[in-house]
Image (cartoon, rainbow, N blue to C red; front, side, top):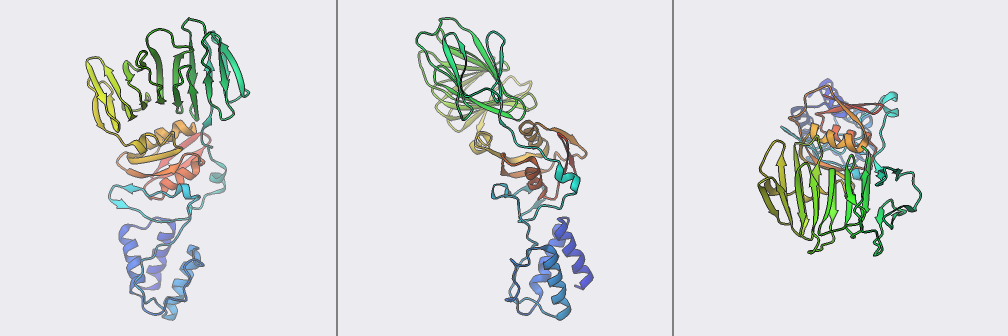
Length: 377
């Protein structure tokens, strides 16, 4: 291989545009070089420019390498939490790379991750911005004090003297928001971005019933005499002492109820299923029958655990989640549905770090303009 060809290969590897065949040729050439390599410090030559200069110098001087070694230009990722291995159809990429150089305009464009944001709407219509509200008692409904803790949780304090009337509150998270609520019975609900829950301030009668939109994870305090029921889009989920997650976003293709522990009954019309831990009930749009499948618990609970986890997802599915969490509008300038990704990344990074990690596959690129993320080839 002459100097000009190797020079071109190094440039392509450095820019992240080398094909698999070119990467193989590049590595094979390094493996075929002969001579002593013990004086070559790879850590000191982490810079692609330094490595390139050293390789060309050795070609000219006839110095090679004795050990068989496959080498790719090393690049850093922004943080350990962002190290991600992605699988793209037809290719498997495994590189530790430095972020691609950005223009000055691109560097200024970024979106912060979501956080503890929500609005509480009381029975009388009063709205309380929870991210602005002080810690401590923020309201009183039916003699039940509503408290905001220092970590942002909303708590309904149980009170034996509470009024025996059913009044409802609603808590709503915007895009880029999340919140947790402890209801009067001790049940805890965790709301993801762009979600809501309507619930009684105090549970009266022989059942506990709440209504949700979006995605909510429940840790239910079991009470056989007063079952806990969740309704969403005409589907009902009845608790039998359990922890479960419901994903029912309007832009998702199905309602998915995933059981972590205990037992739940999921019902829609004449279709009824009883879930065991590790199972998910899936009701596709316009379908009348609920299907049961084995759940991916890590992926299901990633949002609550502070991660974005992709397991065979296409870019459109991934960008829906990014859109909700980063409060971003997505614009497509390419058709990328066939490209599949696998991996995980912290969802507490700025969106630019998440996008750079996705770009390591070399199959997709992004541009941030205000609150818009443009998806490109």
